[in-house]
Length: 288
Image 1 (cartoon, rainbow, N blue to C red):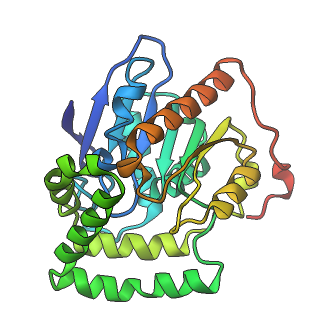
Image 2 (image 1 turned 90 degrees about the vertical axis):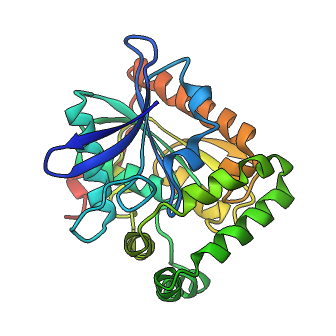
Image 3 (image 1 turned 180 degrees about the vertical axis):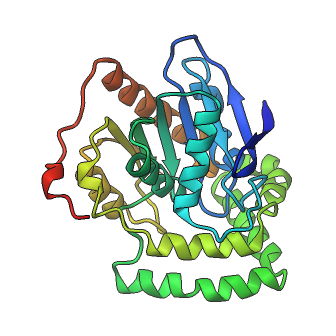
């Protein structure tokens, strides 16, 4: 079920919510850039719901997410999510993030470690443009901004859906729905989100993450190379799971993606319940 929640000081946030067994650790799902909670997590909802409370939000400027007057930032997305958890009186949660949602999840831990009991990160990295090819890619976001402002994004969406259908015929039944979901975003914030993601760098604080972590590596990913995903796995001492898919695995490898995410969440929840913590680098030498 979905509902709109007014979060004081921030605005109206769209929330998917399914209550699981009493006392189970809830999981908060954070979607990727240009996507929505539903297009990223629709196969994962039923895989997680029998075991725990599942929450999912649309980030600001994405889907049904809040339309803020302040400039978009990943930090604001993290603060939106923590403000919502505070309003719902949730004291501890597993945060699962895909792609850009992984960056937001790590920032949630950095900014509110009291709320984040565990992390599950997929299709994401410590940083996004350390290589020349990546720097060229992210500079092209200026062109994306112009294209979105001119209304030329529809062609990109339809091309993507045609390619997705070629990879997975099952996507054909979802084409109209996915196309509609991807058109919900606000072009100004989508372009700003891409620029923010290009500047994101978790390397200064990732070694200090001290909660149980798991990663779900998309092993054929052409946007976030698997070696960069595994560098994240090593940096945060995560248990690794894998899906044989590209960056659109949540859509075209839906069943495999959902199973891997469910296994990763279960592993992190088990570590939390047993009281196991990661021994990070000493905070005494952490850079300001």
